[in-house]
Length: 144
Image (cartoon, rainbow, N blue to C red; front, side):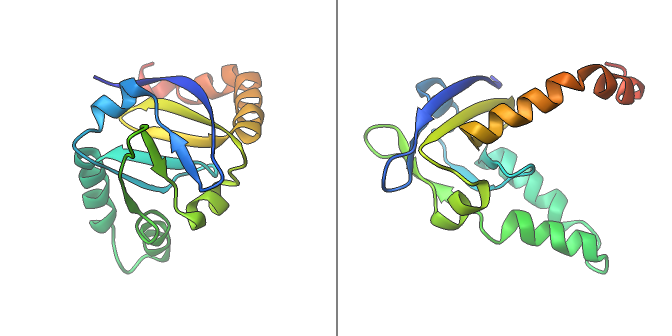
């Protein structure tokens, strides 16, 4: 079952974030949190993480972009553990990278979750929604 939807939550003083129950069920076998793209965080079930990690480490080591991307995605990755209230502790370096404040958004993006600062998510959404026709045109070759 894919991760779908958008959920607004608060980050507590200790950096813990509630993960919606329907998402927790899908990652009960464990998950990894890491830097995402566009200044959000990715949370991937362990099987999806393994697929991504294998692709990353298969990239050519001699290419500086490959090394940079591997460092971005792998260096600060951390296992996710749920407390009794369904919250995860987001490591401080990841909170800082994503600019997380009190209000956050957890979104389902099919095979992963993304955690955004609410203000950043709102800005990102407005920007992409206003350019949706242009984006769709650029992706025409994908058969969508």
